[in-house]
Amino acid sequence: MKYKLAAALVATTFAAPAFAEDAVCYNCPPQWADWASMLEAIDKEIDIQMPFDNKNSGQTLSQLLAERDNPVADVAYYGVTTGIKAGNEGVATAYKPTGFDDIPEGLKDPDGKWFAIHYGTLGLFVNVDALGGAEVPQCFADLKKPEYKGMVGYLDPSSAFVGYAGAVAVNIAFGGDLDNFDPAIQYFNELAENAPIVPKQTSFARVVSGEIPILFDYDFNAYRGKYEEDGNFEFVLPCEGSVRVPYVMSLVNNGPHPELGKRVLDFILSDKGQAIWTNAYLQPSRPVELPAEVAAKFLPASDYERAVAVDYAKMEKAQAGFGERYLADVK
Image (cartoon, rainbow, N blue to C red; front, side, top):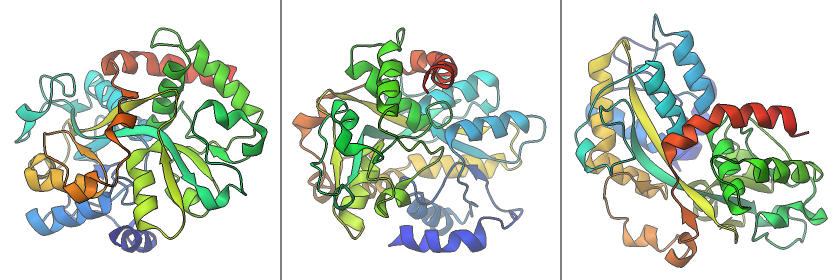
């Protein structure tokens, strides 16, 4: 698989310097969301090489802010709340790629400072064989049971966007909203009794290896494990409900190769580029229909009815405060 090829190349290519004709992307790791295939297609279709990068969303924004006066990256990819913040902070600039008008309102900045390229649904990525005989959990509440002690992982919600998305999902599931995160804080404190694993970055390989048997993660990663890895993997959309979350991209303000960056973004939003995400079990941001053989691999549509959209601009405004509260209150 391309994922495995990309993973094998990380050690030899990650540290390589960018050449003049490269377009640098912050946070385009080949093991996440099939960026491996996208990077390969960008090279093949538009003859632009993109050195990949394994930052998370928060680290990407921090680097963009640190390099504000001398940017290194040309484009950036992040969770929607971080993309909104990048636009507000002035490190992302306005650009409307071909296909921009097809993206639904609310999922793009009107001026093009950020725009969705695909969606994921937050749930549980489960390595069934690593559960030691325990049942596959079906609800967020199940994870507090003693049989799952030391088995549950979630990305640090004060740093990684997927971690924050998981916190929002849990919070809504237990009666909270974007003005009241008390239920999420209570949940994570109760979960702390079960010795959770809390990494800061993408942990797909750690689930596949069994190191983290249950991970708060997106459906596309769980389906990738289920259908493309050796082992027994499942995606669980928790019984209490969850959230659908877009991921977005931006053109970096005053990036070194703006025309290359624009061509990359045009390709990613093109029909051909959007179709690549469907191969990775992602919903495209433009109305590109999922191939039937891919759609058949998802949970039933009736299950996805439990996943809701939220006010992403409000979610962004609440993110920093929640991160600070999580660090202060969750032990």
